[in-house]
Length: 475
Ligand SMILES: O=C1OCCC/C1=C\Nc1ccccc1
Image (cartoon, rainbow, N blue to C red; front, side, top):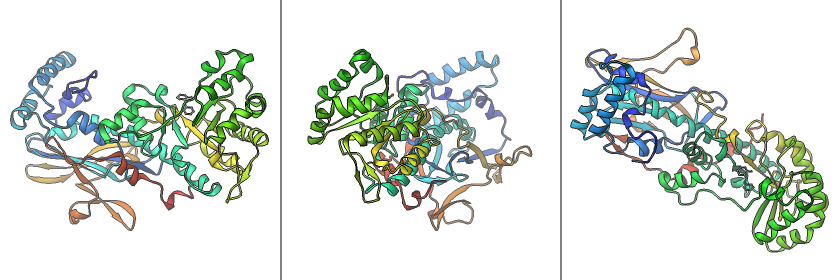
């Protein structure tokens, strides 16, 4: 088990869940639940991250007698009573199942793009003695909302970038690294950085969130999921003093004499820095670097992004010249690019790209970085992710279970045992009843403590890749 704050799997839940085993009708033997995104900011979700939860917490003989004792003692104090904690139920799981969880989870393959309001995974207990188990792990399983929503937020931006690269560039070669993860410092924890950073790397290959690389090695069989380059930050520029800014940038080019480097250039006056330092003083070094196949990414980091990006391109274009590509848009020389890492989100990236386009600039001149907006500015409500009971077996009889709040029809839940069908390229949620199980896109990924599917990032990226319908997405 990993070092972490909570080691005890029985404590990975909201307190009230330990009182639920006494709240089901006697004779309840099976409880079926499903997980969906009811929709919100984005019309689809990229399903990603369940495998991590299963591998990290639920796979194998995860329940032990020691955990039961620790949880029992904690609950007695926490509730101030001894009739809440389900000691018998947990003992049964240790004694009868060796600590393995008698659950079956069926899920859509990771990386699949599914329109919202569709079932994404289902859970059912496999031992009729412990129906309460299905709902018990809701708390943990619903945390898949985070990687799923970050992967979706990231892919929505990839669609916008794909649109502009298709319209204004010769090829899509620079698309995979056109949105770089700057989010490590902007998330709530190292674990969130790993999970969210990994979710972004489903769609892209540029990241500074090292935790995501470790995560994807460990849980998704990918040895190197993303790349970065030597880059300055304000402190490594400003430490030289205001009147030695050009020395700071020169040092960047000499310290890393080949390949691509990025230099943040807005410490004082970015217009002067672009025109006189990059355009004049360091010109020979830039040209020499270009001759060796290297490049310099000039990084603004303030001001109104659409305006600043175009003004930087214009100044650099005047200083170094431009070419016009096959789509009729201007390109800087291959050794010069701009990277905009401030104020980037799915709401703003299109505005910057549109302003570049109307000013005759190809999208391929600019790389983007996004931090808190990419990894942190999401919550469970962004895509309204929920886990609900839809069917149960009580006294041997199957009953459909649902909620239908008079106060919010948007919170209606689905009934029955669900399957996900792909009909003429469209996903549809149907009842298992009366349908051929071979048509169900949900595949068993976990059963009785065993992981049944072990996806690689490579195959997940393949499932989530851009397709023709991703081009005309601009509203
Ligand atoms: O500004 C930043 O904020 C925080 C995270 C990293 C970062 C910049 N990194 C970078 C990487 C590759 C090219 C250019 C910059």
